[in-house]
Length: 228
Image (cartoon, rainbow, N blue to C red; front, side, top):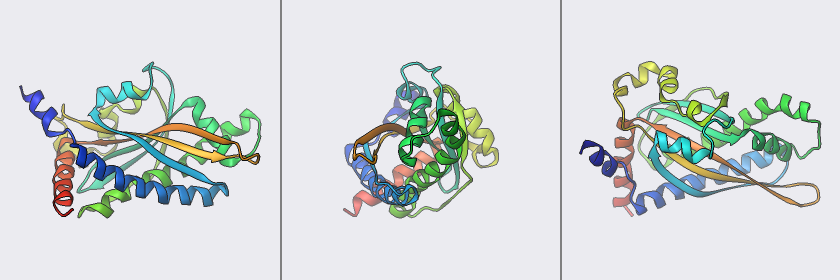
C-alpha cells in the first residue's frame, strides 16, 4: 500500500515534465555552444526522452544486458538538492564520441588514451548545464563537486550504496530510501565531419535524487507552474 502511495507521489505530471524539459533544453543549448567552441566543430544536443523511474528500472533502460560495460562521468552535488548526476555512454559509443568530437582520424590506442580526459571535459560541460538548469528555474542553491570518470555495468553505475558512500554526511538522513528515484534523460549528440557527414550518438544523463530531494523538487515545480 505504501509503495503505491510513493508511486503516486513521485510521478511527474505532463505539465511538470514539459516544464523540466524546457529548462533542460535551455541548459543543453548552452552546453552545445560550449562544446562547439571547445572542439571547434558544431555540436548539437537534443533531449528526446525524459522519465522518472525507480533505480532498478533505470538500470534496465540504459542497456538490454545489465552486465554490458558502460562509461560514465559522475558529478555529485550537495545543498538544498543533494544527489548524483551521471553522463553515461555504452563503451564503444564513448570512443566514437571522442573520435567525432576531436574530428580526427587516429589509432584506437591514441583514442583510448584521450578517452578519459575528453569525456571528463564533455561531462563537466553537460552535467553543469543540467544542474544549473535547476538553479535558474527554482529558488534553490547547491554546489557541484569535481567530476570523476567511471567504467562498469549499469547496475554498478547506478548502485545507490556507492553514491551514498561518496557523500555519506549529506545523505545520512536519507539512507532508509527504498523510494529512491532517478531522472533518466536520453540525449543525442550530433556532429559533422570535414565532409559534412552528420554523426549522431546517443547517451544518457541520469540524475539520482533521494526521497527528500524529490519532495523539494516537486514543491518547486508546483510554485513554477502556479505562476504560468
